[in-house]
Structures are given as structure tokens and as C-alpha cells.
Image (cartoon, rainbow, N blue to C red):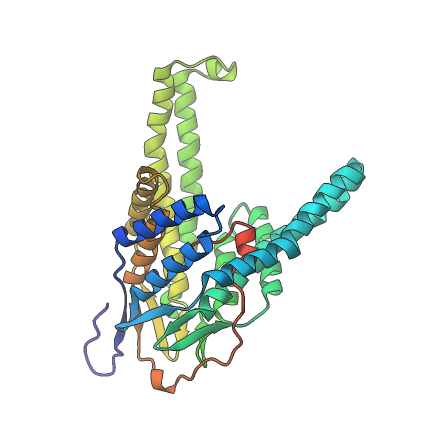
Amino acid sequence: MSENNGAGQAESLEVKNISTIGSMLWIGFYTILLNLVTLTFFRFWGRTHFRRRLWSDTSVGGEPLQYTGKGLELFVGFLIAIFSLMLPFAALVLAAQLLLGPEGFVIVIIPLYLALFVLFGIAIFLARRYHLSRTRLRGIRFAQTGSATGYGFAAFGYGILTGITLGWFGPEARIRLSRKMWSKSYFGSEPIHFEDTPEAAKEPVYASFALAWFGTMVAYFAWIGIIIATAGAEGLANGSELDPAAVGYIYGTFIPVALLIAAFVSWHEAVMIRRIVKSLRINGANLSSRISTWDIIELSITNTLLIIFTLGFGFMAAQMRMWKRIANRMSIEGEIDFDAIKQSEIDAPSQGEGLADGLDLVSNF
């Protein structure tokens, strides 16, 4: 939490998470075991247990968050998505393969898969709406309005622009989608604003992206050049068999290259997180983030090792560690008049993130 001294300076609300790896490893352990005997259906209740613990371990100004979602809501939402969208989609694809010739199949399948990409964005929006509707602070419920379809088409269009520009529209797309998501969000009766604040504008979004983009290209092709020069261009071109020492050399030389690329990408990711967090304002208070490049690098390495050495049981613990680091590097600058904020009157969705689950887009938070 940053310190504010002197007259006229606003106070800070500390955001803090106290989750432990042991508790999350236990939730991950019994969730995977019960998934095995329930044909994976216990995952909805396991995810709910995880969120309840993670939310309650996270406090804002000393007041813990509360997660009110239910496993049954997630399960029902999943069934609705499967029978209303996923199965009809699979049936259309199968029918097109069996009944139409190659030309007809292409005519049918292209629009279907384009629609699927739009559904990805819709699913993400609906999942976030559900998460907010089941989150409370001081008894006040969060909420989200807006068009899920509009968000889906925006995400689809921005994805095309990002591809056409070889990734250069990506940072702008991420900011625009964050604005589209958060500017329709509420804490009780109080809207959450997404603004280009002076603090957010100071973040070197495109400088960090340029370093990540050019740095990755230079590092990768320099590594390829070293391999060709060392192993012999003629041998590689002819597909000659490499001895174990040569294979070990290739992988060994790639490790420092991968770490260098990871450093470039991690700086950009830290910048983007700070840029988005610093753009959020509620009730006159601004959010702030101090997450660093080293935070991203260290978490990426240690979380990967955690998942590997726990044979997958540590996946929830790894997600918790990322949440915890982001939360503990965050603060709210300014005062929020909680007494003036009324309970949300926006209707909450009755089901969970079924579409996102059906498309395999759900994280545990």
C-alpha cells in the first residue's frame, strides 16, 4: 500500500490476499480425484470451492470479498450451452460432411467457424458477467450490463485486425476490450469507469510491445542462424540424423534464448496489467498497480514447475499465486463512500459460465 502524507492527499485502501499454497493444493487434489469418479462433473463444485476460498482470502480495505456462486448454477449453465449450441453445431458440421460435396461443405463450414470465433467473445463476456454478479464486498453486489453479442463481434473484429497487423493492433485491442467490459460494470449502484488516466497513459504500452516483437524476432532468427552455422546448413537441409549431442546442443542453446524472449514478453505483460488497472476508477477512487516484470517472469517459471511436479494437482494453486501477486501489488488511491452506495438493482444471470465451459475457455477465476 502506498503512503500518502500531507494535507489534501487521499488515503489508500489496501488490496490483500492471504491464500496459501497448501489449501489450494488440497482443493485441486480432491477436485481431480472426484472428477475421475464423476466423469469430470465435480469440476463445477470444485471450481466453486476454489473461488469461495480465494475470494474470502482477498480483502479490500480490510473487508473480505464474498463469492456467492453455486456449483449447480455452473452445471446447469453447462448443460444449457451443450444442448442449445454445442451439439447443434457439431450436428451441422457432421451433416455438412455427410450430405454435401466438398464445395458445399466449404460454403457451410466457413460461416459456422466464423460464428464460433464470435461465440468465443460472447462466452468471455457472459462468464465475466456471472463472476461479477456473484461477487460481494461489504454485502454490496457487483454487476455488469452491456451486449455480449456486441462484445463478441468486437473481439472477432479486433482479432482480425491483430492478425492483419502481425500483432501490432493487439495492445490497442486489449485496451478497447477492457474498456468495453469494465465501462459496463457496477459496484452496487456505483458505475465503474474505464478512463485514460494520466497514470495509465504513462505506461509504455507500445514501447514494451515493440521490444517484445522485435526482440523475439531477432533472438529467434539469431538462434536459428547459430544452429545452422554450428550443425551445418547442408546437414539440416538434407534432414540428416543428428546425434544426441547435437540434439542436446540445440535444446541447450534455446534455453537462454527462451528466457530472453520471456523477459521481453513479461515486461509487456506487466505494462498491460498496470495500464488496465490504472484505467479503473470507482466513486472518485483510482486503482493502482505495482506489478513488475520480475513478478511475471518468476510466476511463469515457478507456476510451471509447480504444475509439473504436482502432476497437475497444483493448477489451482498456480492460478491462486497469480491472483495473489496481482492483488498484493494493487491498491485503491482515494476514498470510497461505501455508505452512499446502494445495493445493485441489475438482474443477475441465473446460470453460470456454461458457454465458456463448453468452449473450454473457463479459468477458475
